[in-house]
Image (tube, rainbow, N blue to C red; front, side):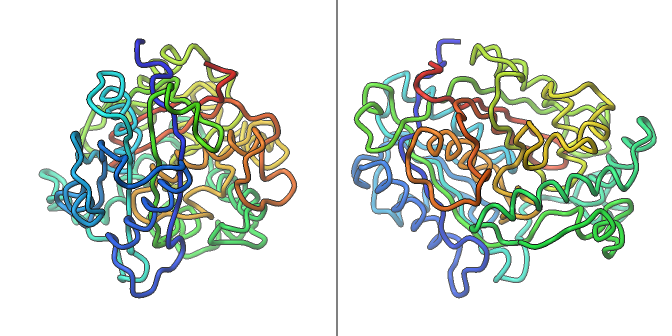
Length: 388
């Protein structure tokens, strides 16, 4: 637990969110880094640690450093899917605490929407490829079906997740999707992979993001409120969905408790919860596995309005991957929303939101990432200085 609060986020930014015509992933990522470094009151020359992963670059950290014109002392480009960036936050914290670096940047970029699709870097899965799955959605539909079978959940229960996310998006001018969304709209949308309709699936957008992490002694001089990484853990139990030990319990059930233990806080202490909602089933599984409700109870919990605006448990407050943004790998955007909520509550100018869009008094935020087909799970706990 020696890594608790040994790294703090002092800068963050996004770029090209939604549609970024004529821009490639590297250009978007470079812009996000420039903005994040400026937000932290630093210069590019201050960066000596660099962490990046995309589906477009085999050596993302090295390519990004070259485009930025920097020569980092430490870098990592490991890729465990959409949860890579939570893992990178842990690696960066380790490097900062060890004295290997002073300033770390974590970055991501994608133009999947305007490029006409997401470039998959996945090899065919043995034992599964012969059946022609349309992954990742086939895998998530399998998990959703199993969950419905085990716990009696319905398509309406899944639809409630999308409706709640749209409610938050309608409070966020930066969200890609706005407007009324009903349970009927979700259930009557085009079926993609039973039981998941088009509106049970995340958006397809462009977008880049970056955050700056530094040691606490340097963070206190940042122009905006530093937000500390209090706890972090990740775990993975499979690569192929056919090897998943249980289709209704993810490795978040292991990563969450370890992150809470490091942070010294529990699920009930969190003021905002940001979950990787690539599909509606994700939110249900993660609410349970991370301790916000018991296994099998997420459907009723969500149906009672707990995660929607005004419901008492602010979940995916930007609108999530279902209604705000999802440029292929969503983990860094989950992280940024968790941190922004804390900064906004501290009085930093985080941009316009409708009343209720910023969570009053938010000092602790959970950001949870998911990679592959419910495979890699990474949980981070972020806190205001008063929580350290």
